[in-house]
Image (spheres, rainbow, N blue to C red):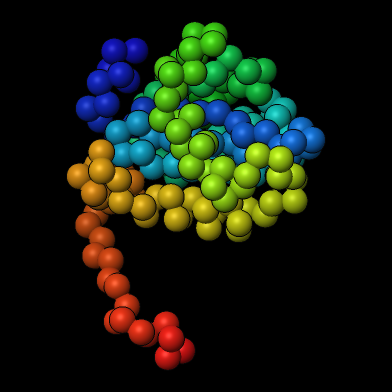
Length: 172
């Protein structure tokens, strides 16, 4: 797992779930370690089958950039062999009670809570609402990335953000 810890290449992801207050809905979160690029899917619950389907659906378009995944030891990742086979990637598990081994994912989940606070019923959240939050987070410049965005680093692109002229919002 040394290659994963080095963060020298894009392709090492950390995964987790964010659970609803009533445990009726959940968000599956994947964070790429080098770029900080996140992918999130809404699922009806924390069941292995739906979590496995969500992880493979999220990462399949990026299969060429998917080498390793590190999950916590929750039952929702019981079908990890299916994920590994589908994406041709290695799967690792953090040690029990060592959340810092997936620190980026824990931090990303904290940022996500700005949009979906603790106590919110996630079963009512739409994938469109999730995607809006993901887009905001992936286009937020990060100091650790030299003030580039996760999107820019993950896709190797440079995006020029423009600021509207002063007072433009007031005229509309």
